[in-house]
View 1 (cartoon, one colour):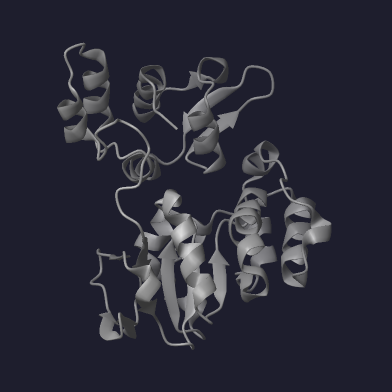
View 2 (view 1 turned 135 degrees about the vertical axis):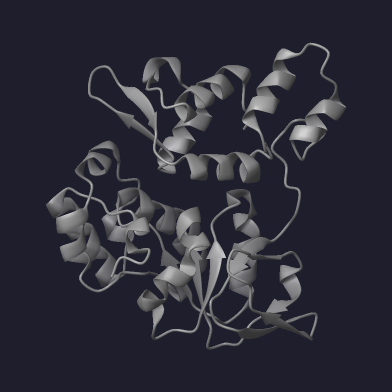
Length: 284
């Protein structure tokens, strides 16, 4: 998926705080950013696009499209004399296309975990403000008692220490959903080890759809959706009705065997609200 000059300029307008008519911002990239809850498409008749999360947008551009500076990217596209070398300076790809720079995935932990890579001891203990990127995941092993927790949103992954209270009964290892194009590597790895997978995402139809379509269908019974205690009260008192109105259900209830997840869907539909997982960052 390539970022065109037209859409790049629209993203800069959104970053500057402007609201853009949805009719002038039609693209697969915009649709994906809306689905990821980075952009918001609202309105019934004259729909508009607004920016919800600037940090997540920059994170997406850097990790999905290897664009570290959208302003430099636009300048290079507008300059007829720009060479391939110019694009190498602002992207990680000499062909200006969406290709993976590394294989593997990001992990984080607030507990010390003794893992192994190629049968050699590897201590997982990232300093606060840093993460670990696992490249040789084929030879990466963790203790069986560790629960692998996939974190949907970048902010929650970055501030996972502030959410320790949610996982007090577990020995968790957190894996970031971003870069999303690394997801296949993670699926291969988690399927190669006996550890269970717990999905920590948004408590709305889109978040449940991500879990079912990207993880559950590949992992089967070893995967489950994380549902905090009192989630019904949190959705009722702090849920977002606008987000619910904009989302479409892209899964079939009859294919879901998790009773707790079905109960969560019933709460969401009854309240007609969804709850962002960022709510739980140091909230309780």
